[in-house]
Image (cartoon, rainbow over all chains, first blue to last red; front, side, top):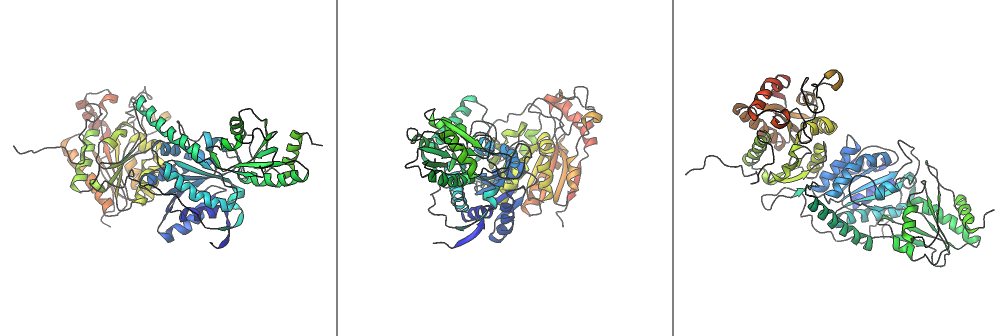
Length: 354
Length: 247
């Protein structure tokens, strides 16, 4: 059993990345993720790794592209406006089937927005960022301990499926201190990176990392092949926590820090006799649709609680296919929903509001 | 019969896609000859740009990565930081290096990143069909400067070698031309020195190669070479702009 230490979410993420074998970090300062860069700047030179503060988010993400192509476990982190800038490289990374991990400690938007916690980049993370037909695995931890486990998972998933993986959090998670153990658990076996551009040493044909395919049939075939992999991931890698769902007749759904607030609301609702439970997606892509489908004939309604104007709620609706009414409650702009607000929202739906 | 002239080993045995008279082919060959002579094909990783030379990944036998437009120096930085003992180079045109990728270029030089850049300056965007480049000369007619580039409204051409020579991190910067045999020989010498600079761990090296684009300049290959000599060389003087390799 590893020793318990008190650590901030952002720093836990950085240390977990190092423990997962990441030795190359490229980034650009932006609040509220800066602790990741600061931690890497301090640690990497001591362990023979590379911390490089790039001239821009664009450059940092393209350095990750290069490092990933050369076979390294590479990481970059940023916050919302910075992720918009990294979108170009993410599209190329996906198009070249390269693994990498990118962290978004989300802040409120649009534009420069604010620096307080938000979940308004859900669309960007799961359906957006760069151009073209591609997906990214998106992991949403809700505690500092889970940050550690999911960071290790992120590197494994990226290498296993040769695709970018995003870890999405917010300033609350990034800057909150919690007691944790740096135990990564069982890791997956990763195939050797025979495709990497490490120099031919005149012993093999040259490796080419490229996303340009001029023939439409060839490009379509390449994209379809990638989507077969995505289908496999949807089937095998979707994760969610089901909390007090065994006897639940009302489902609250929320991810990340919002899910923890929802748990407080659920405790209170249960005291009032409303059997509420929580489904907390851990993978935002692939979205854990099947877990929602288990409850369509057990719950009277679903309430999606988010720090946004309603983004994940669309995926919840798609998952349940109209079999259960899906409602939404959200705060945005950097505001965090209080348990009371969630309780009132549930009572309004169940007809018990005052 | 003795063979006196052949394809360099590091050049793939394929047809290049370039237009007749385009000087990309010459520079590709020079890079390949240098990879051969320094015996570094097996430890080289090249980065292809977006532009006419995007397919360069199919032309050299070394490992290759294709970068987003302008990002080749950042991509090369990522590769070099993972593989510091390998030889990493980019091959970029003027739109890629001197317009959309100016920040990546300048900061790679500022960091003294131990990479080599081959910069093709032909004063026009070739692949997209002949638009004004950052290096298009004053008065030069292109698709997007149909009345000739007017510096008052369209700005002045950028002299990258001069600009980068002011950075502390740049170890070796030279501007060459491939308009005649004498200059081709000098260009090869410069490219070889740039790669040697990297092998010696001296830092950032760049060779700017003045090149032709007969198709988009609307000239025959011979006229294009003359136009380069008469118009480009006076604006972009040849020579060594920085050489800290002896330090």
